[in-house]
Amino acid sequence: MQIHLPSSAKKGRLSLSIDQDLLDRFEPYKHQVNFSAQAEQMLVRILEEFENRAWAERNSEALLAHGRDIAVTGLAGAEFDRI
Image 1 (cartoon, rainbow, N blue to C red):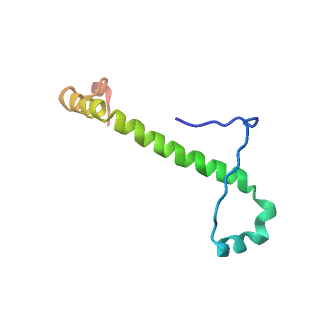
Image 2: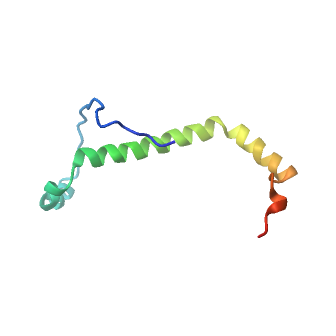
């Protein structure tokens, strides 16, 4: 699942503590980076990872059962596999 955030979405605030040495290294480039947009993209990736993991945990029994079924019956269409 990919999360899409509309550009018109209401924005909130988040306070972060960042290593000062890292911030100092970014100083010459700060006019080239939209830190808010980059942080938002990173948070989206983290959220997707958490949500995917939660989905897999919720569905682990069904996924295991499906894997067992495939092991017994094979994949549909396997007879057409030419590899």
